[in-house]
Length: 173
Image (cartoon, rainbow, N blue to C red):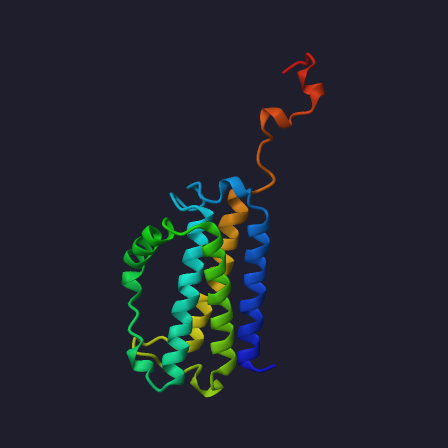
């Protein structure tokens, strides 16, 4: 298996895990804050899409011989995420899902088309295309799938109306 195939396999696997975590989301809660601080599920979906687009940009610059133009500064991540959160809150959930799908497909295509010899060529910020794909792709999907699973964990305490009727009978407590 080539390195690109391995990266693509990891990206696809982690995205599938993210999508599986999304399936557990109660649709009525998609825009409710709380998944990560005041972020909703919709916000997380837009966030993951944005960073996949970011990795795609890095790959396209590298492929076009313009990798030096990729000047992402990790110190700016929080500011970028704050701007992105404001944008995400104006996005309807269906559009967020569609953006994520396009972003994933774009990243997968750019990775598939990349010359393998460019995977370790430093970009303008010193990172490599392989590194950017890793942290913006599979690692990001994995991180946020974990957030979704934690927020929508089936192990939560049952609601009062979910209690079996036998619980209404007198019992020592």
